[in-house]
Length: 218
Image (cartoon, rainbow, N blue to C red):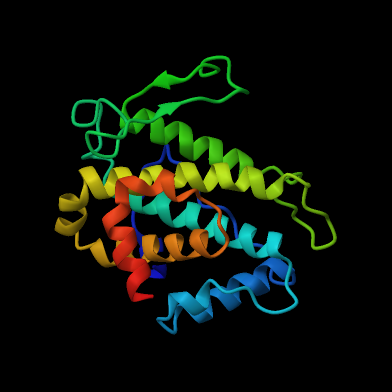
Protein backbone atom coordinates (compact mmCIF):
# COMPACT_ATOMS: atom_id res chain seq x y z
CA UNK A 1 0.00 0.00 0.00
CA UNK A 2 2.86 2.38 0.66
CA UNK A 3 3.77 2.41 -3.03
CA UNK A 4 0.48 4.17 -3.70
CA UNK A 5 1.76 7.29 -1.99
CA UNK A 6 3.54 8.37 -5.14
CA UNK A 7 0.36 8.43 -7.23
CA UNK A 8 -1.14 11.65 -8.49
CA UNK A 9 -4.15 12.97 -6.61
CA UNK A 10 -6.56 15.70 -7.79
CA UNK A 11 -5.71 19.10 -6.31
CA UNK A 12 -9.18 19.56 -4.84
CA UNK A 13 -8.85 16.45 -2.65
CA UNK A 14 -7.99 16.75 1.03
CA UNK A 15 -4.25 16.25 1.54
CA UNK A 16 -3.19 13.13 3.44
CA UNK A 17 -3.04 13.62 7.18
CA UNK A 18 0.47 14.62 8.21
CA UNK A 19 2.43 11.97 10.06
CA UNK A 20 2.77 12.34 13.80
CA UNK A 21 6.08 13.73 15.10
CA UNK A 22 8.68 10.98 15.40
CA UNK A 23 8.86 11.33 19.17
CA UNK A 24 5.13 10.82 19.65
CA UNK A 25 3.52 7.60 20.78
CA UNK A 26 1.23 7.70 17.76
CA UNK A 27 4.24 7.68 15.43
CA UNK A 28 5.71 4.66 17.20
CA UNK A 29 2.39 2.80 16.95
CA UNK A 30 2.14 3.69 13.27
CA UNK A 31 5.61 2.29 12.58
CA UNK A 32 4.78 -0.86 14.53
CA UNK A 33 1.59 -1.35 12.50
CA UNK A 34 3.46 -0.79 9.23
CA UNK A 35 6.20 -3.26 10.16
CA UNK A 36 3.59 -5.90 10.96
CA UNK A 37 1.75 -5.20 7.71
CA UNK A 38 5.01 -5.89 5.91
CA UNK A 39 4.95 -9.43 7.22
CA UNK A 40 1.90 -10.13 5.05
CA UNK A 41 -0.19 -11.31 7.97
CA UNK A 42 -2.98 -8.76 8.30
CA UNK A 43 -4.71 -10.75 11.04
CA UNK A 44 -1.67 -10.14 13.22
CA UNK A 45 -1.33 -6.53 12.09
CA UNK A 46 -4.70 -5.53 13.52
CA UNK A 47 -4.02 -6.89 17.00
CA UNK A 48 -3.22 -4.20 19.53
CA UNK A 49 0.17 -4.52 21.24
CA UNK A 50 0.07 -5.21 24.96
CA UNK A 51 0.02 -2.13 27.14
CA UNK A 52 -1.27 0.23 24.45
CA UNK A 53 -4.40 2.36 24.63
CA UNK A 54 -7.24 1.13 22.47
CA UNK A 55 -8.21 4.68 21.50
CA UNK A 56 -4.73 5.44 20.22
CA UNK A 57 -4.54 2.19 18.26
CA UNK A 58 -7.90 2.95 16.66
CA UNK A 59 -6.89 6.56 15.94
CA UNK A 60 -3.68 5.57 14.14
CA UNK A 61 -5.49 3.08 11.92
CA UNK A 62 -8.41 5.40 11.19
CA UNK A 63 -6.04 8.06 9.87
CA UNK A 64 -4.23 5.51 7.72
CA UNK A 65 -7.46 4.08 6.29
CA UNK A 66 -8.57 7.59 5.37
CA UNK A 67 -5.26 8.45 3.71
CA UNK A 68 -5.09 5.23 1.70
CA UNK A 69 -8.70 5.49 0.53
CA UNK A 70 -8.27 9.17 -0.32
CA UNK A 71 -5.38 8.29 -2.64
CA UNK A 72 -7.08 5.21 -4.11
CA UNK A 73 -10.24 7.11 -4.96
CA UNK A 74 -8.17 9.93 -6.39
CA UNK A 75 -6.91 7.57 -9.10
CA UNK A 76 -10.42 6.97 -10.51
CA UNK A 77 -12.01 10.42 -10.31
CA UNK A 78 -12.00 10.71 -14.11
CA UNK A 79 -14.37 7.72 -14.17
CA UNK A 80 -16.50 8.63 -11.14
CA UNK A 81 -18.36 11.60 -12.60
CA UNK A 82 -21.75 13.28 -12.35
CA UNK A 83 -22.73 11.58 -15.61
CA UNK A 84 -21.45 8.08 -14.83
CA UNK A 85 -22.39 8.05 -11.13
CA UNK A 86 -25.38 10.41 -10.69
CA UNK A 87 -26.29 8.79 -7.36
CA UNK A 88 -24.02 7.64 -4.54
CA UNK A 89 -24.69 3.94 -4.28
CA UNK A 90 -23.16 0.49 -3.93
CA UNK A 91 -25.02 -1.54 -6.51
CA UNK A 92 -28.75 -1.18 -7.26
CA UNK A 93 -29.94 -1.99 -3.73
CA UNK A 94 -27.89 0.41 -1.62
CA UNK A 95 -28.11 4.19 -1.97
CA UNK A 96 -26.43 6.65 0.38
CA UNK A 97 -27.58 10.19 1.13
CA UNK A 98 -25.34 12.80 2.71
CA UNK A 99 -26.18 14.48 6.01
CA UNK A 100 -24.12 16.71 8.28
CA UNK A 101 -25.84 18.33 11.25
CA UNK A 102 -23.15 21.04 11.34
CA UNK A 103 -23.80 22.06 7.74
CA UNK A 104 -26.65 24.38 6.77
CA UNK A 105 -26.70 22.97 3.25
CA UNK A 106 -26.79 19.31 4.29
CA UNK A 107 -28.59 19.45 7.61
CA UNK A 108 -31.22 17.19 6.09
CA UNK A 109 -30.46 13.91 4.33
CA UNK A 110 -29.59 14.88 0.73
CA UNK A 111 -29.33 12.80 -2.42
CA UNK A 112 -26.02 13.49 -4.15
CA UNK A 113 -23.99 12.16 -7.02
CA UNK A 114 -21.17 9.82 -6.03
CA UNK A 115 -18.39 12.39 -6.65
CA UNK A 116 -20.23 15.06 -4.65
CA UNK A 117 -21.02 12.65 -1.83
CA UNK A 118 -17.44 11.38 -1.64
CA UNK A 119 -16.07 14.93 -1.77
CA UNK A 120 -18.29 15.83 1.20
CA UNK A 121 -17.24 12.67 3.00
CA UNK A 122 -13.51 13.19 2.51
CA UNK A 123 -13.64 16.83 3.60
CA UNK A 124 -15.84 15.98 6.59
CA UNK A 125 -13.48 13.18 7.64
CA UNK A 126 -10.44 15.42 7.27
CA UNK A 127 -12.10 17.95 9.57
CA UNK A 128 -12.74 15.24 12.17
CA UNK A 129 -9.15 14.03 12.03
CA UNK A 130 -7.78 17.58 12.25
CA UNK A 131 -9.82 18.31 15.39
CA UNK A 132 -7.35 17.98 18.32
CA UNK A 133 -10.28 17.58 20.70
CA UNK A 134 -11.18 14.32 18.92
CA UNK A 135 -7.75 13.18 17.71
CA UNK A 136 -5.29 14.50 20.33
CA UNK A 137 -1.94 15.67 19.02
CA UNK A 138 0.12 15.30 22.20
CA UNK A 139 0.59 11.96 24.04
CA UNK A 140 -0.66 13.33 27.36
CA UNK A 141 -3.92 14.73 25.92
CA UNK A 142 -6.97 12.56 26.69
CA UNK A 143 -9.35 11.16 24.11
CA UNK A 144 -12.96 12.34 24.53
CA UNK A 145 -15.43 9.91 26.15
CA UNK A 146 -17.35 9.59 22.86
CA UNK A 147 -14.22 8.97 20.75
CA UNK A 148 -15.07 5.40 19.72
CA UNK A 149 -18.66 6.29 18.81
CA UNK A 150 -17.51 9.16 16.62
CA UNK A 151 -14.87 7.03 14.93
CA UNK A 152 -17.52 4.40 14.21
CA UNK A 153 -19.35 6.98 12.10
CA UNK A 154 -16.14 7.85 10.25
CA UNK A 155 -15.36 4.21 9.49
CA UNK A 156 -18.95 3.46 8.49
CA UNK A 157 -18.79 6.24 5.92
CA UNK A 158 -15.33 5.18 4.73
CA UNK A 159 -16.76 1.73 4.05
CA UNK A 160 -19.30 3.28 1.67
CA UNK A 161 -16.51 4.53 -0.57
CA UNK A 162 -14.94 1.08 -0.69
CA UNK A 163 -18.37 -0.36 -1.53
CA UNK A 164 -18.89 2.17 -4.33
CA UNK A 165 -15.46 1.48 -5.82
CA UNK A 166 -15.92 -2.29 -5.79
CA UNK A 167 -19.43 -2.15 -7.23
CA UNK A 168 -18.93 0.54 -9.87
CA UNK A 169 -15.23 1.05 -10.61
CA UNK A 170 -13.47 -2.26 -10.13
CA UNK A 171 -12.94 -2.65 -13.88
CA UNK A 172 -11.11 0.69 -13.98
CA UNK A 173 -9.10 -0.25 -10.89
CA UNK A 174 -8.02 -3.43 -12.68
CA UNK A 175 -7.20 -1.50 -15.86
CA UNK A 176 -4.93 0.73 -13.78
CA UNK A 177 -3.41 -2.39 -12.18
CA UNK A 178 -4.39 -1.20 -8.71
CA UNK A 179 -6.52 -4.16 -7.67
CA UNK A 180 -3.81 -5.52 -5.34
CA UNK A 181 -3.63 -2.15 -3.56
CA UNK A 182 -7.41 -1.94 -3.27
CA UNK A 183 -7.77 -5.53 -2.05
CA UNK A 184 -5.00 -5.19 0.52
CA UNK A 185 -6.34 -1.88 1.76
CA UNK A 186 -9.88 -3.18 2.09
CA UNK A 187 -8.84 -6.47 3.67
CA UNK A 188 -6.89 -4.56 6.33
CA UNK A 189 -9.88 -2.28 6.90
CA UNK A 190 -12.34 -5.18 7.22
CA UNK A 191 -10.17 -7.20 9.60
CA UNK A 192 -9.60 -4.14 11.78
CA UNK A 193 -13.22 -3.01 12.07
CA UNK A 194 -14.29 -6.60 12.66
CA UNK A 195 -11.68 -7.17 15.36
CA UNK A 196 -12.84 -4.11 17.33
CA UNK A 197 -16.55 -4.15 16.37
CA UNK A 198 -16.37 -0.71 14.79
CA UNK A 199 -18.80 -1.17 11.89
CA UNK A 200 -22.11 -3.01 12.15
CA UNK A 201 -22.04 -6.04 9.80
CA UNK A 202 -25.43 -4.92 8.47
CA UNK A 203 -23.75 -1.78 7.13
CA UNK A 204 -21.33 -3.93 5.15
CA UNK A 205 -23.90 -6.07 3.35
CA UNK A 206 -23.07 -4.48 -0.04
CA UNK A 207 -19.77 -6.40 0.07
CA UNK A 208 -21.08 -9.42 1.99
CA UNK A 209 -19.64 -12.09 -0.32
CA UNK A 210 -16.22 -10.45 -0.42
CA UNK A 211 -16.28 -9.98 3.36
CA UNK A 212 -17.15 -13.62 3.95
CA UNK A 213 -14.29 -14.78 1.72
CA UNK A 214 -11.79 -12.52 3.49
CA UNK A 215 -12.86 -13.55 6.97
CA UNK A 216 -12.86 -17.24 6.11
CA UNK A 217 -9.27 -17.17 4.88
CA UNK A 218 -7.96 -15.06 7.76
